[in-house]
Amino acid sequence: MEKIVIEGQVPLRGKVRCEGAKNAALPIMAATLLCEEPCILSGVPPLKDVETMSRVLCSIGLDVRIEDGTISVRQRGPLGLEPPYEAVRAMRASFLVLGPLLCRLGAARIPLPGGCDIGQRPVDLHLKGLQAMGASIELKGGYVEAKARRLSGATIYLDFPSVGATENLMMAASQAFGETIIENAAQEPEVVDLANFLNTIGANVRGAGTSRIRITGRRGFGGGEYTIIPDRLEAATYLLAGIATGGSIRVENVIPEHLTAFLAKIQEAGAEVSTGLRYVAASMEGRANPVTVKTLPYPGFPTDLQAPIMSFLATARGTSIIIESVFERRFAHVEELNRMGAKIRAEGSHAVIEGVEELTGASVEASDLRAGAALVLAGLQARGRTEVSGVSHIKRGYYQLVEKLKRVGARIEVRCEENA
Image (cartoon, rainbow, N blue to C red):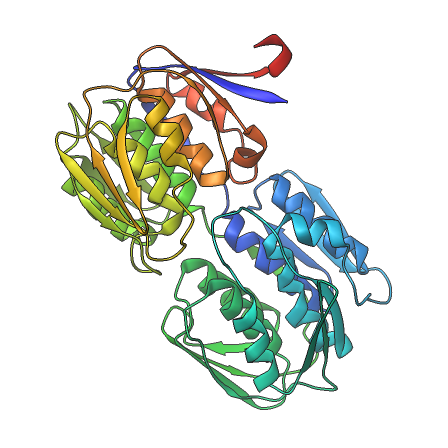
């Protein structure tokens, strides 16, 4: 067991380089199941979730090799129908192998997924879409059993623009017979990245990044080389670390257009922001202005940045409001921030943040990935020492978080719990 120990109130200054986007890498790794020739993926972040997806792919017949941010994938033998229960339960993105396996094998048996406990994230949209394409679906003993001799194109309307459902259906449709149209599709950059990869290996996907995606099914995908987009969520976290401490941070290897809603909010809060080719810089002096934030599907404000920006607004000059419209149980970090002196009231989907002059260091625990990032940001702002446990959650989404923060001046380190 580890803890992140922080001595706060040090302005952070300097440059940080982003890794590739985990949320783009995982579905693209799943999509390599569609390939009959080797694939090489560059810019893949060396994270626990990437290792988990690698184990899933290896367990069903692929050979996956990871070295220096590059993943080589090839089929080593017959594909299997069923990935391991433990891996899929540990990480929701493992469920994305369902669509590709149906294409390649005509059948799949996938455990119902797990992941961070941030509210209901049912897979019914995935399953309804596959049924519309001709798959038979049964739920048995915590598993999804799916069969389809060959999927057929269909028009699918998603009740909610689910990223996972859009990705799974897009992969399944890429080798279906005929044309598939996904209406009310997710528009996230990670969805676009998957579409670009699919087209690289031989698919015909049009409209990714809009609410209507058209896929004309094809057979016989080859392989190829592809570079993953930068992680917009990691970039935003480091920008918040800089402005929350009254410093100045330049984040490199980032696509500024992916952060439009986030940058608008921190500018409203008083940050000075500049952007250029593959970088964003932000600085701030003094306390933030209060703002109202409502999480929405892309291009709205990301739900994954709700907890980090709440930490930043905890010391604003006035009352801020956050409305969480995507997940219903994503305020677990509120109680921990209040332990550090924040004044936050959460009821239902709303949180009211009465800004305080400063936070005070305390022992707190991360309940999920983004809550963990929020608590680290709070520790960087706080007077005194903060100890953050639940580090395993943070490692799922941030590579070398502590090392990168140290390089820009943070007094932060990881300690084994028995030595803390």
